[in-house]
Length: 346
Picture (cartoon, rainbow, N blue to C red):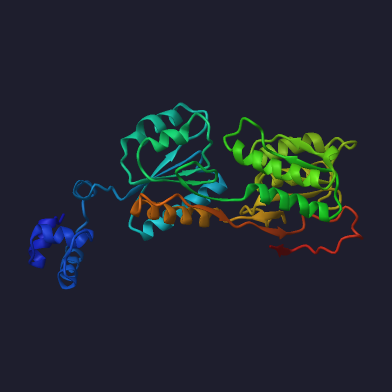
């Protein structure tokens, strides 16, 4: 395998000049830089990450920590992060910090403390157990996707607005008995759950429907939404006419539960979610669309800006969310609504 000395010899320069030309750190004339890079390409030279780190004090690696990698949202965020890092020639160190496991504590106390990266992107972490404070002690720039922390840049949708928009869509269709499904207190994403629950509650109160507020806790998954919905939808005396799901997976679970027990969607029950999950269109689910992949990509841009200018104040970006109306929602009184399915509303 070719080394820096081989590249320098072929290009006719010193090792230090070859190193500066390849790293981009330090002055080298354009003509010399071109010659060195041509030599490196001809020899198939790949810089040693250890050597680069020793020379520059940087690892060119970004640490990414998230509570799951096999869920749609987190997988999409990770895709966006990886795309942006590859474009910048940076490596990714992924930590799957599953809530409630011994490995999660070790990740925060041991692996992250090694500081083998130039910055950290934290996705969907809770402000519990002082985890964000522990991240700040490593002395590296931090960006969060979902949630926020003092001293860290952040990108996320406005969860309060998303839930209000979803609820108001149902209210405009004439629904009054609207239930909110999801948001059990023990879940790792409880902060987001609470904001979305709050948005639903505020909309119901603003509409003078406080007496109809109903919260059905559910695990944030399709089976979780199904299990929670089968029970309360079977109660014909208290069955709502509409549901706001804390996320699309819960909402889709509710649709499946309704179909299993003979409740027609949307004739008997309207359902709206939040996310625009990859399966949302298949179930014709009305939802608030967000783009987690775009959020992951933007998180890298925020982190790089912070790495290049450590003294710059943190930035908080509100990612967009847009109501996508499909066939899972319809009017409580079908003759009174002019809203058509299959449209998108800003």
